[in-house]
Image 1: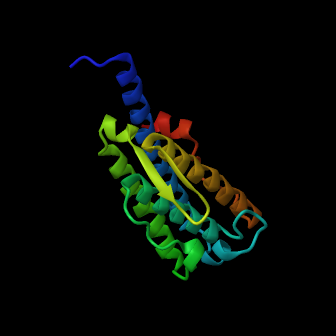
Image 2: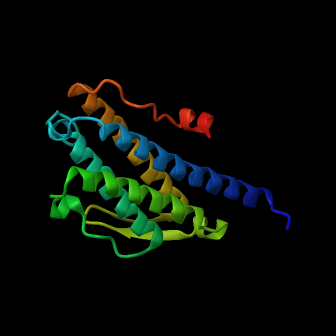
Length: 175
């Protein structure tokens, strides 16, 4: 089968975003592995930021990834921690964010080129919209990267100065 230039571009973009999901999984795992070596009480220490602590920021990343994965799959979303609160343990957060990152990477690797291009609908208490699975995937993965940076910054503010390198270029060079 000969692919048109447009099909090659779509496949390349889908391949790139699939790799970004695998990178997201890798970066979240590195971050969690690092945080597991630190005193648990530091994970709840309050610091001025978008979310008040390392744990709360991790919960937000996990919650948002869960939401966007349901949108990408077009399945009903699980109840949001933002709306229902989260009272689980730190270990539950570590496990949740890493398991969800694996689930997202696995799901995205299973998509066909046509499925990547499909428009999906999202509805939330804050907004509604229709975009391609490609666009929503990019948003979700960049959102997680943004907040991983906040985890490192919050960590630095509570005395954690040895954060692991999670830049995409480091991942790319390692693989």
